[in-house]
Image (cartoon, rainbow over all chains, first blue to last red; front, side, top):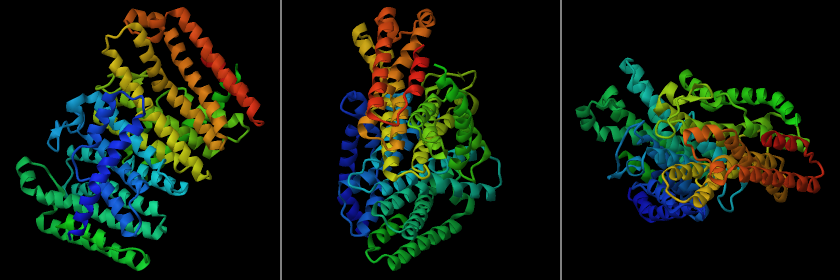
Length: 292
Length: 292
């Protein structure tokens, strides 16, 4: 139960340090300082760095070293996550002035800069994956494909589109629950899934094992979102926000959370059977932490 | 002089057809029809498809077949170009209601959808490059790296950032001319350069030859922008738009255009020396067309 917390305490600072250095290399030696400052502000927004840490946890679980190549692979996920937050906060989108207690990028630098910062962060993610040192090209290609798919027109961005559409809908509750399930899958679970898949692709695992990592992380991502809704249940009710938990009821949401935990654990158990070098302890501990 | 026009007439329809099919595969089988429609509208905006055609012209100039792999490589450039237009037109950016005579994406679908459409188009470009059929992984990685770099934080997006900053500046004309040179290079030339580089990387050419293609296309891109300014000279003067041509004067702009033509042609001549299979006719014809 504390194992992932320890792992986090060790690697979160390394992830942040890596992100900070990456901005400088991605923006290039002639970039204006204000531009570097904007990108850094957006990328180093306070946060848990859950996505890179999940990728690193997968790598660590197979006994591989967390070296600069592993860190660069993992941080690419944070570049995508950060871009999505910057664009989500835009006046044209959620119009949020604050993000984790500090001004959002558009509130500080203006909406035009926020659009461009987000665009640059997305490109940066793919640039990082294509330049991971000492990694075979076929693994890099697989990682680019996975991240582009999970973050793009059928993944995370589609989740946002469905979420927007769903705010204006008059559908019945059952249909709405189905939509929300899709939204959760795409908005949150897809990028967490990409994190686990990238870890497996970085290691060059067999497809069947990579699929099991995806199953684990997909369930973990949905669990993450439902736990979030359960935590915000009373607040959402006061503010009139309709979450999946409100639609299906508290009892069924608890059941669903348990099913997701079981599904994620089953994937880890299968992986333990399939992969001699795999130690499930760290990912089990993460599951317990998210599901707590 | 007519050779590139003929090439365009042959391949523009194939590029458009490829783009249309790619939206469907990228959005996936379960995507809402409205989402597919938005992406298609943005991607199929009327235009010359100059960037994909340049990549295809490079491939053709080395006697290689324009097959589905070549088309997929080339169209990735249009996904980036299209995303940049959608975001440029946003109310927070240039606030343009029309683009080539039809409603801009935000004007038709709203600014939130336009942000998301642009984001999905960018991801789609990298997804396409990572899935080009029958292409060696190291070539795919090189193409992803080039496109991400030329389109990102030190390339096209930085060009936009510099352009914005430059609208608010009080610098003297010489300093401004230097800035505009940077803006032109990054906003326009970088993506055209990426098109030629991707063509060379697709073919697996030697680095020295790829560099010559980059030199050709970099000069071509600047020429393209300066010719545009020369064409708009009177209109810009009436509307108070400050272009590089206004800053350096008409005569010097004509000189600069000639220098760029010479530089591009010199790169083609060197390439002819270096590469037995290279026929410079098509790219010379494109240069003449842009420089006319």
